[in-house]
Length: 299
Image (cartoon, rainbow, N blue to C red; front, side, top):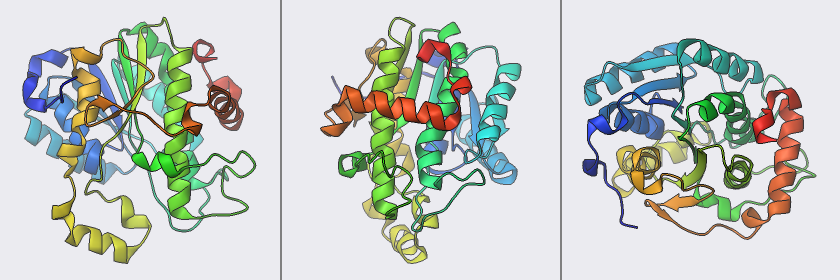
C-alpha cells in the first residue's frame, strides 16, 4: 500500500458526507477537520470551550474555503455531556459517515472528573467508547461509514491492570497515558469485530510525535521546551495525514480492525491482540458508562 498524501484527493470526494471530529479546535483535531473540509465534507467540530471552538471554526473555514463547518460544545470528561452531544447531533444532522475520536489529555498527577473517574482513563478511553456507542445506530444507518480512533505508539508501553485501571493504587501520568492508548487499540479491535457485517469499519492510528498542546496540563517546563523544539517534530497537518487517509481513501474501504502508522498497517503490542482481554475491557467499559448506553448492535 502506497503512502497517502492529501494532494491525491479532490474536494469533491467527500461532498455530501458528514464527519464528526472531537477535540477539533486546535492541534491534530483541527488539522483533521480542516482536511475533511477541504475535501468537501460537512464537518462537525466537537469542542469543550465555545470561544476556542468558534476561533477554531473560523480558522478551518478560512483555510479550507468551506463554510460547511459546524460547532457542537461538549465537555468530554462528563458522561451527561456526551449523551447530550449525541442527542444534539442526531437532531441536527441526518447521517454520520465518519466519526473521528481524537480528543485526549495527559495529566501529571491523578485527577478525577466530576463523576469520580480518573480523568485520563475517562477522556482518552471511556469518552471514545461511550460516544461511539451512542452514535453507532446513525453510523450503521449511514453505511458504508468509518470510525477512526486516534491512538499512539505509546500503547506499546501500556498495560491494562483490571485491578487498577484508574490508577487508584499507583499513578504515573505517562504510564496512564500509555495505558489509555492501549485501551484505544483494544477498543478498536473489539468494536470492529462486533460491527462485522454492518458496513461500518473501525480502525485506529498513530499520528506520529507531533507539535500540539498535549503537554500543557502535564508540565509547564516540558510544554515550553516542546514548543521551543517544535521544528524537530511533525506539525499537526503532517500528523493528520493518516487519519485523513482512513477517512477518505477508497484504498481502505472495507478495511477494519487495523492499526495504521504513516498510512500503512502495522502490528501492535502482544496484550492488545488478546481477544479475551479486548472483550473484558469492553465489558468493564460497558459497566462503567452504563449498559443502557451501549447500543445492541455493538453487544
